[in-house]
Length: 87
Image (tube, rainbow, N blue to C red; front, side, top):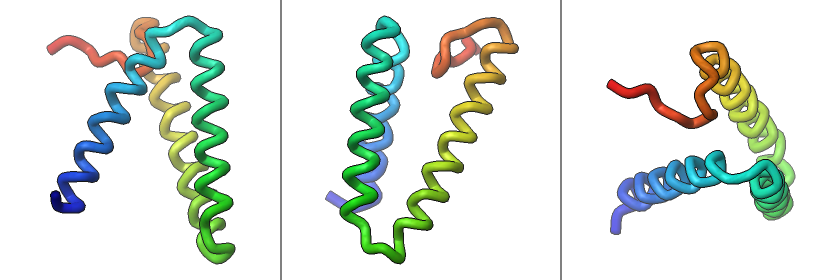
């Protein structure tokens, strides 16, 4: 399996997981957030020190995009984060 295909499958699985997470209860979302944060911390620790700054910058950029998206969708009609409008 090519690395490109593996990356696509990984993203698709992450998208399915993220949609499931947001359809759960508040307590389950908090638990999932803690797990995500723990995984992120484990990944950061495994990186070489010279790569940690770039990792932190990428995490910050991701969090900004997520916050912007959540705010945009909230203003657009109180849809749940991650929900897509019907075409």
